[in-house]
Image (cartoon, rainbow, N blue to C red; front, side, top):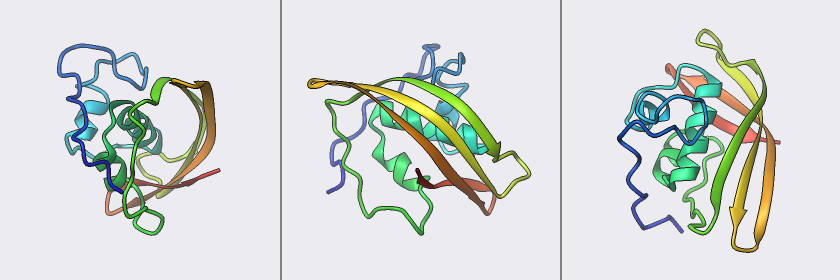
Length: 135
């Protein structure tokens, strides 16, 4: 089932981006959420984390590789994404066609806290990066 509710309005002021890059949201992930292509696999991964934090399932589906994209995505509104740590990258630069990003994403929910650690794989098609899968 698709998350039918509209995502919360993203920050439009100079508040820090949810991906914790140190930049404000409009200068960081906001531009990708507005349609600009992410230049690297890491930039796409950060923007996808921010989309999870903001509840934007539409962006997550748009940036998922067509071969592995689910039909729909139902995000848990009680799950709060609190912190992102990028632990490493391999390839995924502006001239690459594939790359990986190793990260930890910390979350909080009414039943407790947790961390998701993943090595995400990305592919670039027609100048745009897509999330393929994660391990």
